[in-house]
Image (tube, rainbow, N blue to C red; front, side, top):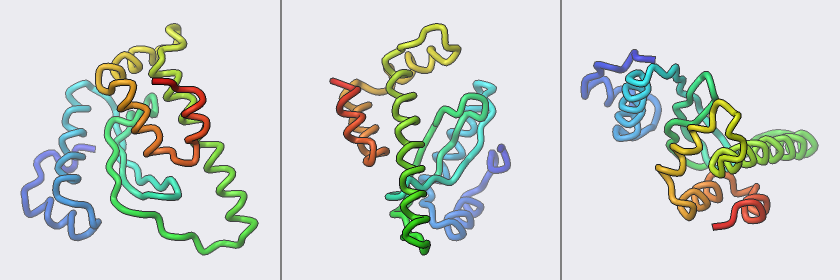
Length: 153
């Protein structure tokens, strides 16, 4: 992290050409990294693929919290056997359900003894309940039934 702190417009253009990300997404990732550094938060940029969309996210490496997430495009169909695909889909759905459960608990501030309860407060400041619900449904479409059953606006 920090390799792009002083990136010029030419540097951003080269990264845009190499990755397919827009210059605004690159600039946003750079800014998110700078903001995270100001808070002394160790971050990492990871590639994401939820089975529907691909993108990049800046995460807090200590807590796993997503600081910033950008969708780049649609996922490409996997060239795998049907049984492997079914197992992968089930695994992805289970992982997404765990993520959604954690995010909902964090937003609702269920466990104040958890050291990350302050992040729930930050989430509530950043997103209204309606916006939070919309984002969950958008980011985790396969968990929509769970989301709708467990997060009421």
